Image (cartoon, rainbow, N blue to C red; front, side, top):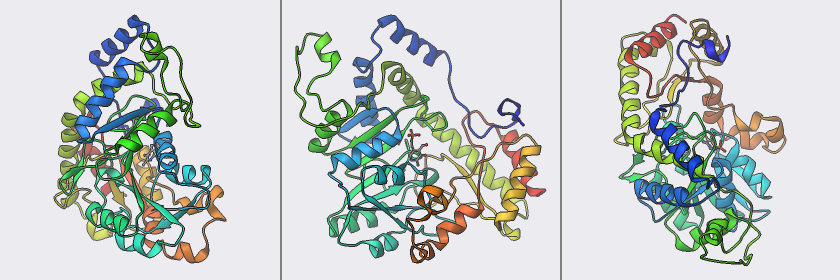
Length: 385
Ligand SMILES: Cc1ncc(COP(=O)(O)O)c(C=O)c1O
């Protein structure tokens, strides 16, 4: 079945006239590279998360890598992180010459990194911990923050799923030394390709701004406005700048974020209500209520955990034949060719819950344009597996 033929797609964009007008305004201004629109987007994003600084970048992957670099993580250092994650965090760890050390998740019901497993994984080489707010539900941040301060480790949030959500009384992205967001097309705040780094630390924000743009002390925008005529290079930076079109889209999407996250929450509740009227749970299916424990999830994903891997395959095929798109978040990182030899057998054995979760997880459609008829179609099809 081709993408276009899905009756119920996994995700969809809430785009309208506002986004079109915002892009047209940028085009008409003839200023396309990072400038005034990006600055506004950064200010508004920082206010939404409740942090001092937001630094817009090309994508979530660069947001992670720049955070590692800004925190001074160096070749030979170890970064503890979850194996139930998109591969970007581990890839960027290796890219800077550091080593990813995977720690297991709490449970199949709470697939976020387990604080006790983080503590067990600490060695003399550990420099940082990356947490990932899986599906939009906060990791156990108070405990994790305490461990990081006890062992003097940097804390980085991969908040790509968590935009607009909170946990333990604080927005995701406002806990770590730095946090990385992605604005990829399937995210709660989508611009195609884009990202943001948030931090409360002035020193880090300054380094991050430098690293984002070749380590240069002024931008083309500053020189265009006559605020500067030359520049120094104080860091060996990259070009990870966002552009004005994406920032304009980001500003419009940010205005819709809270409303759309609430729609996601209502749909997730509807899913769970429908599930309760089936026998799926008694057949061994698990439906983690991401954010159910008083946390304010961003409900990025609607997650089902099949009784076993074979049932997941059968369920994906069944839903596909009914025109319903599903996905897997995520394949188990130590199984990837580029990682296979790097994770010892003993280390894999310590990741039993992560491995089981990755083998059985199935993501159902969830986005603000769905309605309760769609959730009913999905659960009816799933109940027939
Ligand atoms: C959890 C997580 N981390 C990192 C990324 C990387 O973000 P990007 O695709 O914007 O580079 C993504 C997005 O795909 C993600 O979902």
